[in-house]
Length: 200
Image (cartoon, rainbow, N blue to C red; front, side):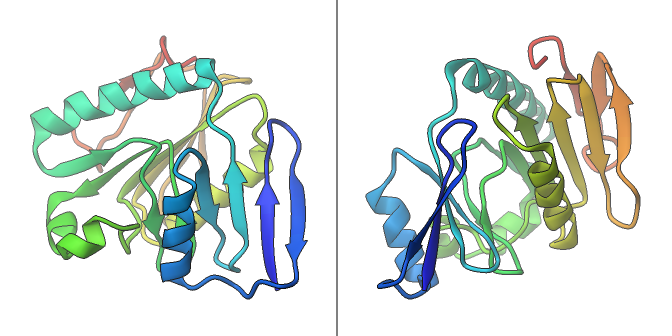
């Protein structure tokens, strides 16, 4: 039985679809291609999560975040950056779309052209999740732990509501930064500093 979880705004609805078996990776890819206007993820358990487009305010803040990461990525040259529309297939089988991500160039170039053109089968080295008003903090914390468990070296959960950054690294408890003006990606992303004025 396939489970489809729909998150319209602040309400989560779970639909049981008894006539459908769990989608294969190829079927999930085709499902996403057929619904390109939606942001779709899949949990490691096979649960499909459909999210509406971001609200305009959140989209603007995501853009400001991705713009800063993109400028550093171009100048640094050691990796490739991604916005919130990119999906990745993690080692545990989940397909996730962080709000921003970065992958070391050698890891990206080790993928085939076909893998790069799909949901790349790896976990980014760096991920960012920006909490919107409708996002569950507990759910985002679990997602950040999943990224770290699957190979991310650095993760930022930006909680705009409380102006707190949760910094995740392997084998460490999350570090909380309260109302910072900037946050540094060192040493994993040397020289990258996110200015938060346009993100808050």
